Length: 90
Image (spheres, rainbow, N blue to C red):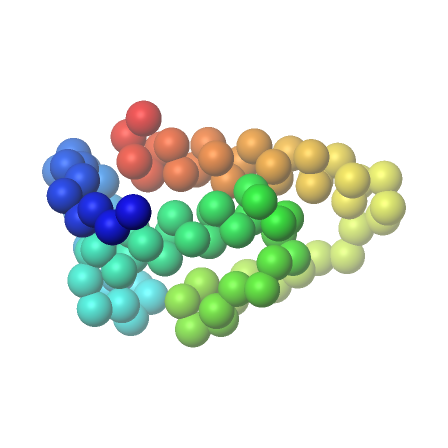
């Protein structure tokens, strides 16, 4: 489905403009698409999915033990959706 007639609130558009400028993207639409793809990939495939490093800013990883790593992964499953909901104002 190809539909670019979505209506977004002004605060979401402002955040998208900010992300676009920080990530070096051409406009807010590109930022919204990049953020959606990142969090959709995180949700569908986990944090270790292949992501275009030119779009997503580098965040250093920390070593964790196996028990805390599994706790982090289960928390991250919901974090991506929560952040996407916050960005879209849902």
